[in-house]
Length: 249
Image 1 (cartoon, rainbow, N blue to C red):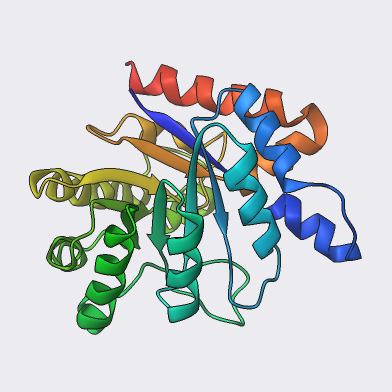
Image 2: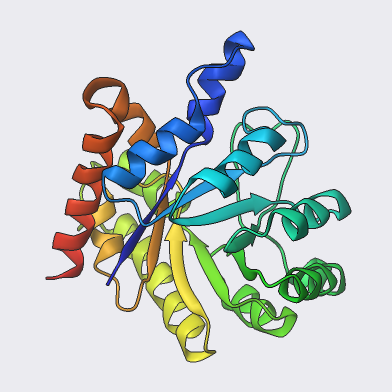
């Protein structure tokens, strides 16, 4: 059954805007859980622009659902993950000047470095995921470095959906969706778990949730945005309902 991982980074973004103690991303994680989230995702960035080390520690101690730690494959982050021991660590590309993650990890270009990081995380008992574009070369490289999970970058699909009339049947949207589906088939054929995420929202999530074999969707900004108006529990409940209805068709 399809699962929902809720990213609470932007709760911390609001807090850091004032350098204060609220809103608390751990509180948001608990509310997300009560709304039906199956997991919590946070990205501990090297520049600590939103989530802080203490947030990760408290989330590990206080939440009762899966914790997915997004991270760059650096010595510092591998060390933090090995100590905190989230259920899953997702390796992502990271740029200091980007607003959010702008593309998938280029595993092919840095295979040895990434393989070393993956092996260290596996040795610490952590399931390793990689965030990749819908590119078969990257899928095959993910298998070679030992990843158990591939999260396919849905940003190009979401951009096409938004810019081409919000129509799931438009040729541009169908083309991007097929790329995700093809990548998902390859991921599953190589024995890895097929997850997806990035820029998914209440209007574009259903076609992705209907893809064969997709296990988890990781969604943050859209849920936190809706939570401003309806609360975190209700925002999560609405998203999960859309996903489950789509996946069941």
